[in-house]
Image (cartoon, rainbow, N blue to C red; front, side, top):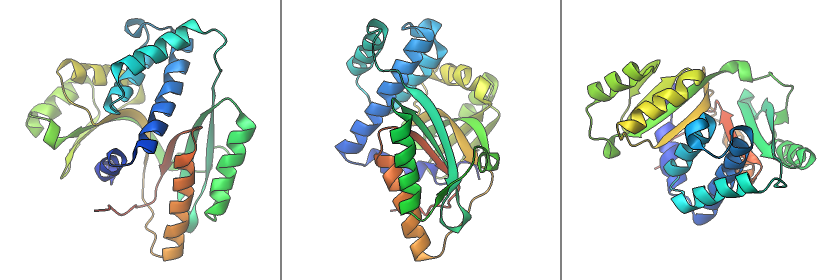
Length: 246
């Protein structure tokens, strides 16, 4: 199931401490800077910036913080240039992990990512070694407690907007799109005031790996925690069948 464990993960992300929120804002701030540099500061003419703003709002970033980030990126020609780098590797038990980064120092980032894998008894692989196990999709998550529409009405709205798939689970709805259609689908739902718990282009595992050995579970948590603490790391995708926490 493509929406596997996702709502539980969101719930726990929202319940994390202020440090985690600070990390989230740092990540989004970098995305704003990159989007403005690539397409300008006007969201109406920059779909990438519109998507980042939507992500910022889903993370409860204040509007004035978003606006300050846009103005800073637009007005400071000498601001730090961030470049993206993606790492792929293996965790315990043959789990697959993809790490997307945005950094002003590739050497530092590469060293930190490699260290995280090593400390969790994993290993970095070559480009493409695990990404074939994932599908790149636009993913929009809507929590049932935030949405007044019926499942059928929301499904029809999403499909009419161009979504590829709609799934319902216990806590909410998952809308999947082709990556190229993600922005238009998200904006169509936004115009209808559909509250989105998360909206992003993501990598969804085709299959999941279950870990039963306690040491393996401890090690993969170590890798994921270290990556999560690194400000250069934007996104981490993995195919571990992570148990929901209560």
